[in-house]
Length: 210
Image (cartoon, rainbow, N blue to C red; front, side, top):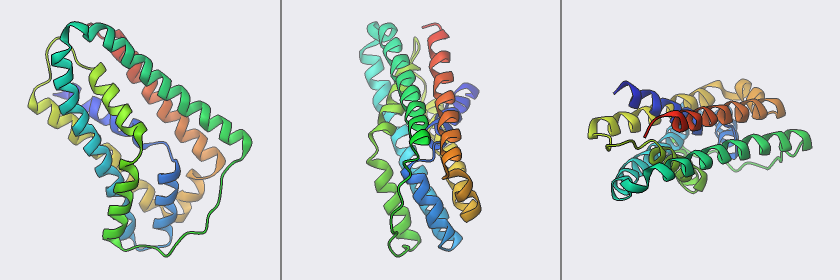
């Protein structure tokens, strides 16, 4: 149970920490709207991460049971996928930092709390990297026996809680935190931290006996 909790927390923070387009919009939104709107938007992002974690746990477990004889090679495929995602994220952040390619756009009128939640939920659900990340992580973590319902629930809940805590932190920080994390150095730092988390998960997966 503890392992599922820690894995869920690491997975949630690993996907939530990078401040990309969604994170940048979340911070700027919270800086010009009531706190309730920013928190609602943050929970929209976290809800999408939680839904992807749930889908990966349910679908990944079923697929792992069906492909039990191939779980060994599949584990290494998943390790490579996670390592590639970590490398891609870090390389992209470094390239953007060096090129100073931060675009600025005129923002529309700030939405209300419900609209902010639904908008951020929809935008985050459209991100295929989130689905690939959780699917690779869950599939690669399958051992000799499938995780029980309690472990799955703990993993999904922990992933949602980790994502929610980070997103709410971004929203609650408002303009001050926004200037720190959406600048060149802030985006680079958060992307590198997230890549390091994903790399650690890949190494842990590779070193865990099947």
